[in-house]
Length: 201
Image (cartoon, rainbow, N blue to C red; front, side, top):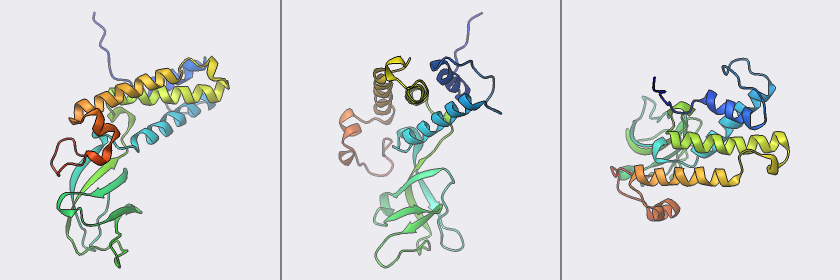
């Protein structure tokens, strides 16, 4: 019978981190021993760090509608927000899970506008990431984890060359799926496009 290959799960990734330091795998992510808990924390911390850059797969253009108080409440997992399109002149930031109006003499979470077009960067669970992102995150996390636990980069199963290769694959996938070029990837200031463009970031 043909084996079906599935995307990397968070459990798979944690077990790869444990294998990198010679520890036995775990069967679940519940009630973890010290090494496994440390591996999971390293994986999730690395995932947050990578996702904070903002990628095609965790960035979206949305229309926000103000509540009855004139506030724009953001999804709980938003890590960056910016106005776009017809709302671009309004300077906003995320403050306490709500849009904060930074325009001169405003400085408030209460808006006169009832709708705003925004670009959101969101923190996603590991299993919602594309496989190429999962690979980069767990390889980077494994390198960090094993260097911390083993105490010597030379004894690591994963090294910086593995991490650089995984990052190159992630960058290549980003360009392919967002219709951007490598120039856009490394020169964001040149890559601004009108709202509605598929690769808008």
